[in-house]
Length: 358
Image (tube, rainbow, N blue to C red; front, top):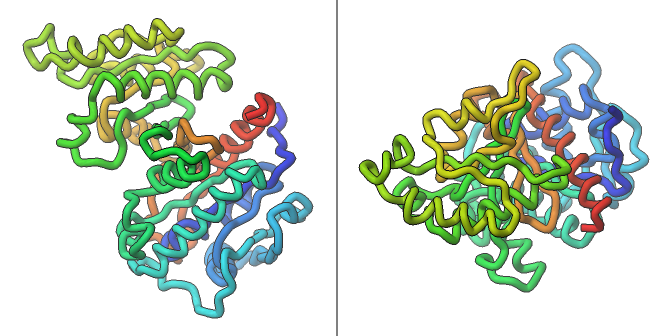
């Protein structure tokens, strides 16, 4: 099957310039010329040129092309790195592996530019290289208000549509070849995550998951619903959230055409959903009640093929399933596989959105 081709360029944000983001981006353009055709980097030219030297070793250094407009990426030759600078800068790149306010601000500025371009219909979507949440906080306003990419993109999308953030609900999905997981809550404390397991939040998560995966699968997804408590509460002995919150939310979702299971024991549902050895899992996706409940099993299967997809946005956004890896930055050893998978996923979702008129 041929790779989907977009009629609009696809933006890749550079991530934290002190991390591995720029290096895996250069590797993606070097090693996956078909997947990255029509893509460009939103970021700092000097940072990407440094990254090109880091990954070259004794080989050829990929040229960095400076773009004036995003659409120029559609005619760029393969195995070069097209970069659209957010702002002109004569400063040297940020030191590898060091937290700084400037690095956080540069990462945030790239995301804001790319997201707004996607919301205006100027790019097909965005693939976000990893940013560092501590650096984002150091950058101050407006970035310090957002724990990560997801919350920042949610705020930008809400503003674009003239809505409040609460009126623009989003969810995180982590996916690889074996397992998909959607989370009810994202970057909050465990105490706050438990409080977020409400009937409305679970129902909203089910509906967002259903509508996001329907065009990808061509049918209603089979959603396995993880319980909150051990043994799914054991009939109320270990907690009643399954009976009073999760099961009623599932019932309400089923009335709207959602194919969702009753709350299932969280210690086995991920194994049941896992696809392997040519055999489909029992579920197409698992709805997890909080961050680590869902991400530990999917990341245990390996982050090299994992992709983070933000569901519910009026734009396409994917990212690799790993962080900035400051300890690897500058070595040229970081693996670009997850980023390449994120680009593939963004191309596919962009084509589906275009076909649906969204």
